[in-house]
Length: 282
Length: 316
Image (cartoon, rainbow over all chains, first blue to last red; front, side, top):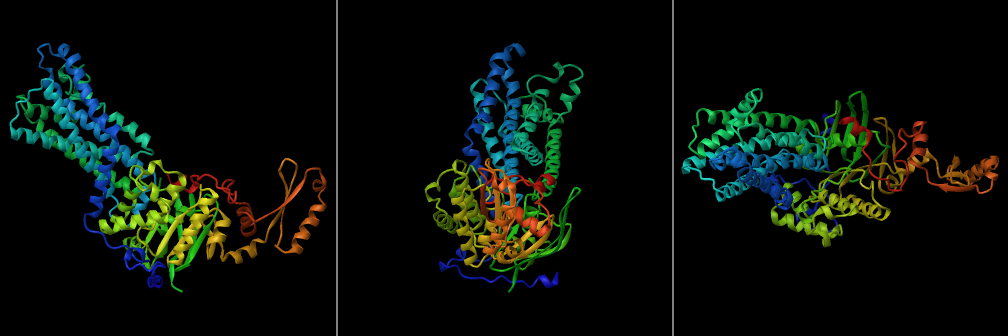
């Protein structure tokens, strides 16, 4: 290679004779440490705000489900009228899932349209594209969650949480959103097309139904109980429920933390592997 | 003359297919270089290796004075890639796309904005600057795509089939832009399926066949090997009955017509002759001694739709 390393490219000022460096042939200036991250986060925010339909869906669907469960099924499930207190924590997680699922589509779209190859051939951390999608999803979903809690309060949800417990709820909800977003981002990387990414994501959205989100696990058939009891969403829901109401927390909090951290770790490693493997391929 | 791109013995295998089988390249700085070949010849794989996207299995490669394999970031500071499909963000507006690329290229927000306005003007997109790219036509997307590659005037510009899918007018506009890039001092490396495009633009042309350079030289040098115009005999329905290569001279043409005279079909009612430029098929026949490997993508200059190349399908 030594014979090839002495090549220099003649730098000729452009015909326009511009004094600014951008119009003249030369290397790109070096970018600041977090420039790529901040640019891509801004990009993903714009995407979120402009995709009005997804935004509406990710707020409206959980709200409709909550109204349906409290007004239509609620009295049948719990004639005492306290069902709203039970179901709101479940709806919060359902909402996070809906909102994060669009991350799979966004990531897949970037990977399949060739946009990613342009970023990969620039002197930036191209993985920052994914950081942008993840941060946007986190903010989007926290907003949607706030709306859901607000509507919950309107229809009679009466949490007994202290400010410190509210902070803990915020923390665990944010961690859960991060975990499910990372998972959806990895699915977006694995899927061949945005449509497939959307399809795979749909399967994940069924998980909350097989948990203690809507009815206690003890009311389910015997064979389903171990699955519902031991899947990651149940401890997260139980933790939020215990913090918001007076239910006992037990060790559910630790299980919830453990599950979320484990999902983030697995999704991040899987995602990083997929991301590097797919360079130059569509 | 210094070299902007230099490659020795590049090999790349996808599955059981040798996409590149010992490719050598030497592109002088400040020139336009065309890599000509049919679908599946390995054009995109070559570009992917030169632009740091894919590592070759074997071989040495240097771009803009830096080793692609050991110093990819130094190479990335000095290149831009315009791929086969328009790499534009459809949700953002034209201006936002350009400003984003400017910021990612290390420009301040103000400089990025000024550069965006300049490029929109140059590519005749000022009126559409504030519209989402999703509403753009194919030609507008292509122009924006190229503008994005020029946000910073890097020394080496890679264009993978830049005019595939464009109409004749858009294609000619793009050719003018590509020439102006070389005039500004950049090296342009482009791939194409169109002989005419290589002929009109490139200082040097390399013909890629089965992952190797089958021939390389100026357009004139290659044409001397290919021969001149081709005389075609067609029947009433337009089907080609005979194709005779000529050396482009009056004498050669007369000899070809004499040869046609001996064919009974030439005397049939409705039979017509036409003289056409050599096609990529003719180039391949002349250089490799056989037909271009693929039946597609050989309509010279008729603007066929972009197609997924076999090498990409192989890569999935």
